[in-house]
Every structure is written in C-alpha cells, then in structure tokens.
Image (cartoon, rainbow, N blue to C red; front, side, top):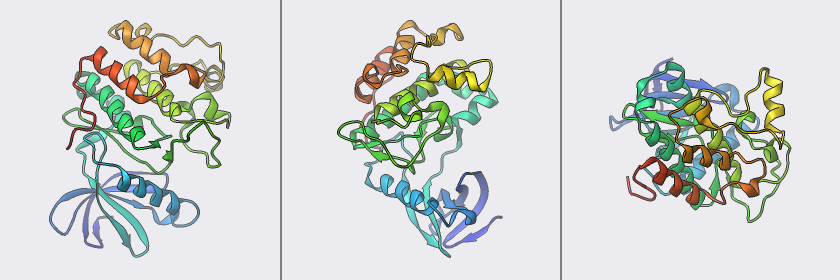
Length: 278
C-alpha cells in the first residue's frame, strides 16, 4: 500500500516479483525515485545477501548513461532498500508485449544501449549473469538501462564453476545450463538471445514444445537460424553478429563485449557512448 517508508513517500507499485518490489516514491528533498526494497517474505534465506550484493556492485561501478544509478540505500524497520533513478518507461519484455512503436522506432539505440552497458560492466570486472528482457529498462525516449545486479559475479581469470546458480534458463549458454565453468562470454550469449528475441519476437532455439526448445539449446549441431528469416529488415551483418554471440562453444563467441560493441555500432550506425559521463 502507499504511505510512508522511512524518509520516502510511496506512490505507486511499479513492479513486484521474486524477492523485491519497486515503487515510485518521493524522497525528503522532493525528488521522484524508484525505490527498490525486499519484500517482507524475503527477509530470510539468501535474499538479503543477494540484495546487498547487487547494491555493492552498483556502488563500485562508475556512472554510465545506460545503467540506472543508485541515489541512496539503507534499511527501514529492518527492510533493506535502494533508491534508484526513476525510469519513466517499462522493461523490454513489457514494451514488446504491448507492441509499442517506441521499440520499433528506436531498436538500434536499444540494442547498442544494452551493449554499451554490458561493455561498461565487463570493463569494471563484473559479469551480469542474468541478461534478459526483464532486466533491460527502456524509457519513453527509447533510452536503455541495464538493471538488477544481484547475481553479478567478478569475471574470473579463466572460466570457473560457480556454486550459486543464477540467471534464467532460456538465456543461459550451454556451459551454464550444464553447470560447467563459465566466464563473461555467458553474458554475450544471453545478449544474443535477448537481441534475437527483440528483433523476431521468438527465441533462437524455439521448438514446437518447451522441452524441444531446451533440447535445441543444448544441441551443439542445432543450426541457429538467421534473425532475418523471421524479420526481413535485419541486415546480413547483424545476422552474423548474432550467430557469433550464440555459438555453442564459448571459445567461438566474441572474446569480449568491447569487440562486439564496436561491430554493433558500425553495423547499426549509432554513436558509441562508452564511458561518456552522464
């Protein structure tokens, strides 16, 4: 319900799912913010640790125009919260379900905005490990923001196994699904799935049944289709970029986001804003 939460006045519940909820709120200075807090049912178990970890990752990151910045954090009556920039828009999943023209009119900017954010994250030594449409916010101008760093991990010097499962299966590379060692190239794969879905409204491994989709995803010989097969407007060079992102073996994907990002900016003709101050 709306009301006071510490120094914040809550206005509208914007999103609720998993362990957190996000409210539009006003702080003591009268600024509109997005207040993200743990749900009361998530105050036990691993949720508080994950929430704290996501906040610490944001604190360590330099500001970037495609990552929603944190303005404040703390606890109210034992409930941890973060006050973030309020993004007037919706996540990529919500926009595409609405079939809103904002996405179609700004699709190149949305794609390179995601790439810019991941490039920035990786250059600071972190991998996201849950890249998906729900974690990409797009505002009313078509500007993109990467959010939710609760499952982020430091990029290892060489691929390693992680004892905590994270991510969303449909966007995980084979090595992650199979519990094998992984590194930042898991994000490159998830980025490829997300962009393919954005362009075609389907996943690259989609089968007639959910179990077939997973089988295709884990089949090294499955021929990944070109996005242009479902959307003729996709240029051939972008097809090639996505196929490289979606390689079964991590060694065959792009070596890093910097190389991938540079190619995307060239192919899509969008200015590179990497490391540009907000």
